[in-house]
Length: 68
Image 1 (cartoon, rainbow, N blue to C red):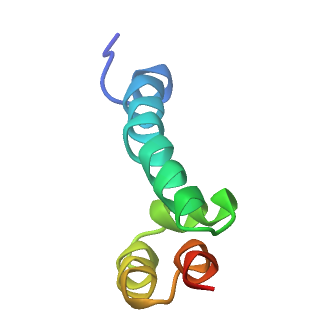
Image 2 (image 1 turned 180 degrees about the vertical axis):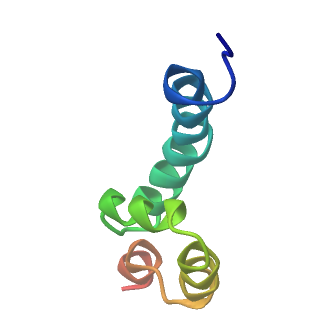
């Protein structure tokens, strides 16, 4: 029987990806003043790149609160 990257063989890489990308992204998003639920966009191909650019150049709520 072949134990390739299928079924249970994919669980660890997927969980590792979720942890390595999801946790830091959620922390940064939270510190910027947005809901951490926006981290979901980080896992959607192409949308993640668009969201990164929009997020990078948007006015962050946390920074706006410090200025006022």
